[in-house]
Image 1: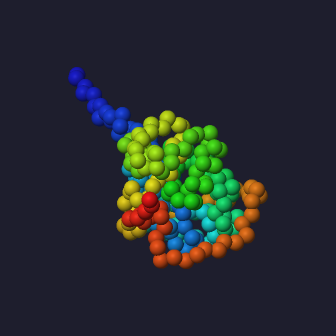
Image 2: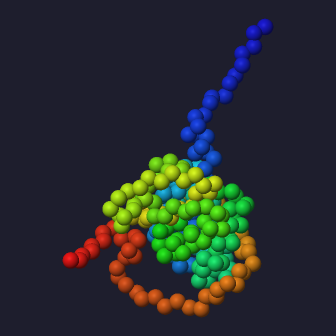
Image 3: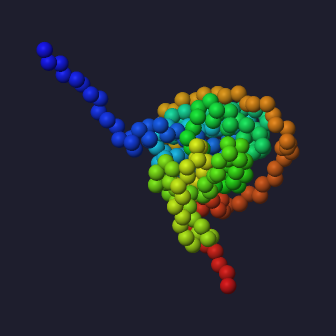
Amino acid sequence: MLRGLLRAPRLGRTAVSLRLQSTLVIAEHTNETLTPITLNAVTAAKKVGGEVSCLVAGTNCEKVAQDLSKVPGVSKVLLAQHEVYKGFLPEELTPLILAAQKQFNYTHICAGASAFGKSLLPRLAAKLDVAPVSEIIEIKSPDTFVRTIYAGNALCTVKCEEKVKVFSVRGTSFEAAPVSGGSGSLEKVSAPSSVGQSEWIQQTLTKSDRPELTSAKVVVSGGK
């Protein structure tokens, strides 16, 4: 009797690699509304391939998490609410991200290249013992990124071989993801113990009709 053997189709190395990728996007927000550069970071995260999750940390920010869960391509939103996150201090946010990384073992962690991301990601990368890649403008593959150097006068292609790729995203280089059509799950996570290295007192902001520099579509500069 002849018996046929059924063999499963082989997946290429690229397909297997993309399937194993997972990216955590650190959301920037005001507790009431989502900062636009986060949606640009989500678009960049989707270009990496694999599963995309978002972390929302703050006080009374569940609406922000719900909005993020509606973004197409976001599979899960982690929500952490505690008074210690009132000022979004990087000293307090870093242990929370490390705890999420330990639980879910993400291959990539990113945020927008704003003041928020620039203060948080270097500290996070140091704790993970990896070198971060700053202000990427293109993703060629899960480990290869393009960023500007020499004040934007040259482009540099960087291959990152770190165990966890930590990078910031230049918002103007990626389209903002739409906040509709998605159906990601919402999972509440508990906040680690307070580090106690710094304390948030207050913040005074100057209102302006101009857009943030990191999200402006056109920037005009001059000089002699």
